[in-house]
Length: 290
Image (cartoon, rainbow, N blue to C red):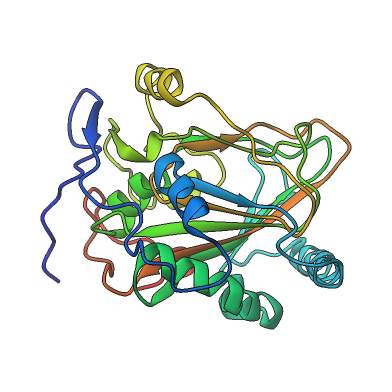
């Protein structure tokens, strides 16, 4: 497979650098669906994220919670590679490829209301690059350090350009106390080129605790000084859409309240994966569908 021109080099130099984004954020500015309007689309373009409170109704939320409990119960003690455990423990941290193996989460991946918004932003048909359920049980759920997803997808999966987004669906209430996601508005317009060569089979460690492909503190501080930090929180059934290059992270959950979210990464069919730009081989298909 021919590697595309690398306009976002990372993990190749001894020092980090900031690279201005050259790709659009919104690929279709003409409203073609009824779920969001021009003002919301403009907010996404400017800030890199859009929070849709109460997107799903109470009946749908009840089904979310039941399916999440069933999934968690079925994965406890599992040795399957798509079941990721917490660092230093045996509690389930994430379950990958749920859109392939679980009928309920498979149907959620093609929900017509969500699909309409995603196609609006990315301006094309899409496919699921990655899906997962992230669990953060009360008291013990660990953090996800600051990162841009695109940096990893570019370096380790071969995603050539910024034409993808994440959709996070709250399966439990997200509040300021249970390790909810934090975002840096506007950071999606700057790519942080990271240092450190990618180790072989890096995913085996990074899915539990990422150490390569994370931003340096100077670059992160600069992004935060420019855009601040926001924490979009809401009830179960809320949806957070965010650009592939938006800097985000979450703290540990030391509250009694569990937090679970379904993540779907949608990539444009016009942005299919190449060979990795900074890794010796692609990650497995349960992490990055090819």
